[in-house]
Length: 452
Figure 1 (spheres, rainbow, N blue to C red):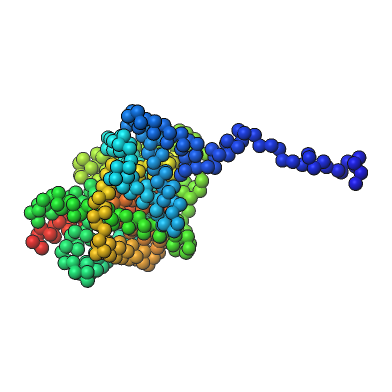
Figure 2: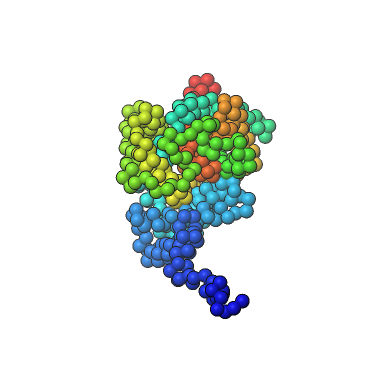
């Protein structure tokens, strides 16, 4: 070919344009992450936290705690995600909660971090901000028909699951040489009591009064079972998520009812495109906060837990079509933000502030484990089978049934996070709050009037 031929292209000119240093840096910021935190920012956060701890100046203020909880929470979650096999069945949520608890117990977490995190968690009630944004966002993003049908239909699988789970748990305990009384009231019932504040503590008070035992002793027996039951429920949630991936025809990926489109025109599984303006997002966040305040008023007057009262009000607003589609979109963005950015930091704070590692370890006996596994397993499987008979997605119903064994609101977060179905939070709250309260009240009533 002639060098003067116009069709000739110099190979030197075909070279790709050189990538600038800035572009390489941007690539690292956008693609190298620990959780959702860019690696350079993660390293910077760790260095700043370490420097503050060495100087004894780590603050429990909102600004510092956001960085601290994000650093440790996403680090533990990322570790759990990368565990072989276990990473696929909910290890991220488990590690984000129980690794901090173990680090506190063995003294491997800086004292300043423990002190400030505990102070911040207990003084701000940030868990309830998280729950109210998740609940309102998921309710507002649901189809009205699905919401109405689902709330009525989910009750029957829940009740059936609990009854079968109780019988199976007591039966397994009996075969292992544990009396039915001991198995039911100190293993099975605590699992289904709705967590610590709403379950274990009321149970210990009731047992102290009815059985004439020290409340501390009663709580010491009940609390480890609640935590271990919640731990296995998280693992079960992760297993259900993997089962849904293998058999997609059995799941709605966060929807209980099949063949229903979303009212506001956007599925929760779709990525946020940025079309919702900032005012709508702010309105969605304010709606969640105001509904929680209404829930607190309901709790004050009729003793219904605030998250449940808020849930019912949110459902009424959704069913009555009183919230505009624009604000519903805003609520959905708030929901997605809290789901992706706040879950692991919250779980870290829970692990540090209110999860005693020694209590969890003390419950690890073969007999307890077998009873817990059989109870949670029977509850979940029964709920799934009954839900399928009622025309619901069996795996999603199973996830809600699994939440009946969760450790309160934090358990719901961990289970739904492991199952990758945070949109089921409204149903999980019914399972945990209402179901747990009814279980505790009815069981103590039977214990005081018919057994003793």
